[in-house]
Length: 613
Image (cartoon, rainbow, N blue to C red; front, top):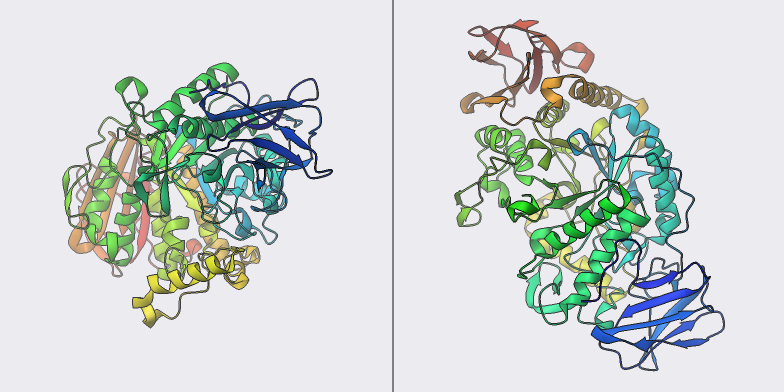
């Protein structure tokens, strides 16, 4: 494999200090390769080198110029490593100097992972205009809420202007309708000025269907494996070296040239790689080199549908070295506890007993038989610290993959929403919010696309209807291609000035403040934790401590008052927070103090927190 430099981007069009464009393309399928400049149709020939690479250095191509590559004399395609596609996925690429930006964040240091409070958002629906610049205007709001890390859904160029981002086809190019590369850099710079870390969602398991031209250049895909979204990327078959380098360089670019603090890597269980060194492990090795070079810290977070701690174990223990993972099982156990939902994968979860287990063990299934999978599933993660697990009561998938895109604000009561928030915030893991949940946004988050290929758009529309054909009682699946579907998914910021949304915002704000200030919550020690679940009453008691400080949380997920006996591990404590108090629009105040052996009454769908301090 051609050597990878952590110091600078090499693939695509880059500019040296002499005003020259240095071009490098991996195109082993080509017999001849040229660049065609759009402004005057000039063609510049590239020289073929070993391993399928083509190169040239030229003064004719300048930053801002539009160009395409010409394969074998007559086939014109955009640059597979393009950093800008101002004409969309089928148009010319634009040459940019990725190193050219006036950064002001030289004193920025990434926030320690254990202190991350994540906020997942979709750029296009987070604000009315759906741009990076508009997002910047909401950063003070997020600071006021108590968030210190924004997780941006994928921004790799996709067809049209409406997409979740998982149909991206130019992994290096930043979506032009959001503000492009310059807009993303400016956003990151402003975030760092305000003390906010930036996590970027990247997709290394597949590419979208429209504008996906990688296959004409090289062997980017393999028939060895399938993914739910089409052909698997080629990380271990013939010609895989060029593919591995392409995605390693992409990751390094985000960290080095865009100052991204962390990536969230989509569905890494769908990355198929049986090489001796898994692609994730190799990526981590290069990121470690980069961090040594720059002195900056970067994290790699994975979405993982496998309870396999090999992904998050350190390199020195033969793990892949990922810093953290989303833990869907916490969400599933919490959702089943709150709603009783039991279809699909929710059928694997019993509710409150499994919620208690995930507080303690992170994974619910760590070696037991999974009825949904029809096999024994998972492995214990006893030695993995709490900072390696990210938990949530909802996210873009769990909302958007529902037929009608309902948030928990539409599926549960106001009281239950407060309880769900409390359950997440007091876990010994990293909390993540889904945009709008902090003020009980009622708008759905629907599935939407804007494919420009009419046949593909119709196929997506038809597929969505067929997927939910059994749900006709709930109505028709919204048309994913319709612009109104996208508009209906936008946040309604004016609701923050109304009730009960204002109260919900203050509730989240208070929970996050307590999490920052209380050492028993702030320290993610999974061992200083006791939990007791009373299944018949749908109540749970969580006890966490650090040094002499103890916190006791009482959660009643039932719709009725519940009398419980305070367990022996709870010392005499005074009330800190009560979702049933009038200030939180509640109607069932809990006792001001609790002590072991006492009988107390918990209001329906309530959350209470006590401390011995």
